Image (tube, rainbow, N blue to C red; front, side, top):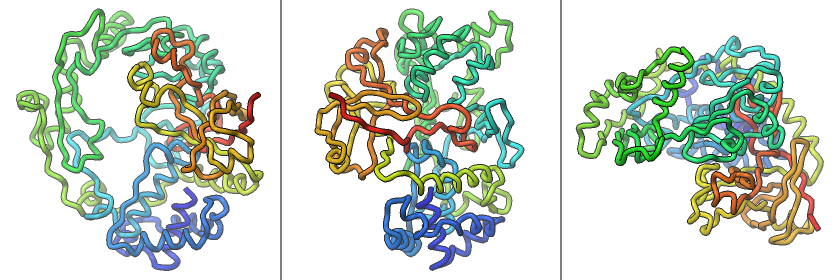
Length: 470
């Protein structure tokens, strides 16, 4: 976040913002006021880059004929994900690179994502017993789940295609909270770690047993298309579609049913959006491969299409609380003792969160464990060698792991892959044979531990201590 803020500050001071991009922002003065506190010299000690290098990076980006900037899961899981994402878009827009060839081009989508249920105003925040936050897409912070269960606000939980015990913070405290629920139901293909605690595990259909509309990767497609895929085989055993599962439960509970069994739910949900491309589920089903290519929107038309007059609220009020926290956090970072280690998440090509933990072949290809990756300098400082056992701890929890020295890591940074921790997952025998440890036991939970704008938990950039074990 601080690097992006410094880049924008230096570009404005040394080159000036792109005039066309700046003209689209209705409150540019407020943006500049925020950026004024984050020059390259100011953020250099925190970012870990020399101030001259930050200036060079900023000016090279601004002076390039075309440039693009991308941000994804890693930064968004930090303490300032919403602000960083805001600054990323401002960097693209204020250098003239947003919605232009060679820059950041919004891709055509067959079905548009649902708009956020919460607005950009301060009133979009709610006051709860656990602090103020902004419910995103009508969702609440998972970092508050333990508190909500303990305080009686959540008494029953349905988990669909998820594994919160391993993918959220809390560790043993979360397990205790889940065990205290009046009802815990999982809908899944496996009895995963969370399913081991469940009162009921309801078997869902897999990707071969149900029809589907592929909308997940639409925003990343160079050639935009939409694809329908039909079921290939009949469901095995008692597997049912999620529509059937929740309809049957709703019927027994006397609750309203939005899409009754027999309703074409995919069509009901998606035909409105598909109609803008003269498509429908019925027409896709008639195509030999279920694929329809879409016309790419011409660069330069996105903002005028999405916003009246093409203007942008560059400094939405909802960000005020996040900006105040960022200033406080900056002071805290400056006062951190030398040698503080920060734990980040490590993505590997053989694991996808906790979803692939029971695939035996992947265990042999590098997914058998989740070691602690350490830089050579930090390993020397802490008297660690490759393969040695360590305890990784902080105020939130502790895990034990094996060291793997990695010369691609920056000093002061350690890394682990999440999704492991299957020592008690008997429903996934291959995962249990290679359990690893639940690194998310080290993630902060509770009031104030999450991004109040996005409600995202902090799952990376977490301070930890590493101690060698005998």
